[in-house]
Image (cartoon, rainbow, N blue to C red; front, top):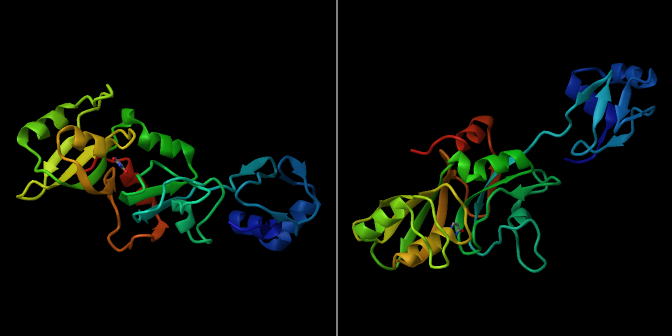
Length: 240
Ligand code: URA
């Protein structure tokens, strides 16, 4: 959010007229970052400044939740010296300090990435303890056998000893070369390693859902948009 005049921000946030705000400031009833202010026209940063009026703190900072359709070839980092990142795809009007991808996709995976500045929400949806499923669609180079499907459903151990939680796996096509996998954890290259471990290397991988929320089909690769409150809640719900 760009810097704004103090009186304008308070007027909009508290439903007061600018004249009323000026009176409040004149009477020493407004603090910014703990200091009483005397200039109603001063610039504030609504993303980081803390405002207090008559002892009541106004949460200038409202968190932001963005659904991004990550294209192939972009890294899921906040910053990279040489490569394009998911944050480079966020238009200026949605960008704000502290934005980061809540859960990473590999450079060669496409699909749903949630960008937010809300660390608590990110932690909640990523923690395996909360059982929030992330759904992937993978095309594989060998048909997935029933035995492999059952092994993944029970939870396999990778060659390096990493134990994986049970995954929900569904074969989507008759040739058994397209599979949907739901997992609640996000270990390094997890889906690729799981499928390679059962003899079915991944050819393409896309994340289609986070919790019960599907990637908006209207979003083209590289596009993003704000989530509604209802959509944000759907992320925390069980997928079908
Ligand atoms: N699993 C992977 O292997 N890659 C991803 O990008 C996400 C899950």
